[in-house]
Amino acid sequence: MIKNLGIGTGRRKTSVARVYVRAGSGKISINDKELGHYFPQDEHSVMVRQPLMVTDNENKFDVIINVYGGGSNGQAGACRHGLARALCQVDQGNYLSLRSNGFLTRDSRMVERKKYGQRGARRRFQFSKR
Image (tube, rainbow, N blue to C red; front, side, top):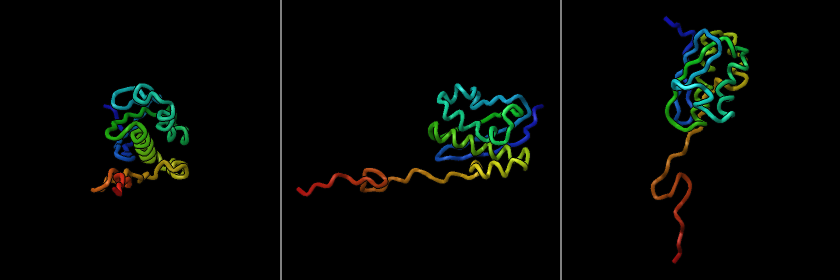
């Protein structure tokens, strides 16, 4: 049986990621796909790997991530947040470096809701005097 060393839940915008850290060789899979296939853009795959790079754990753990909701940017941020939380569970010594880089802070920025009588959250309908 495979034992999870750490479990973390990450959130960003409307995305939620469940992250499982296991002993292994550094393989990262997201929704049963390889990291490079799930996030073809380099900036997103680098964002997911950041907590591993900061704590020097790039080739020590296998990471399994289930992520849903939102777009690719939000999902990458949720994966990073969840991975940071899971690495804290694995070793409390990682906490300081992850906290100082801001990976443990939940980014609370969300899309503002649309208001009635308007075209968007702030945008009004075009005003016509005549």
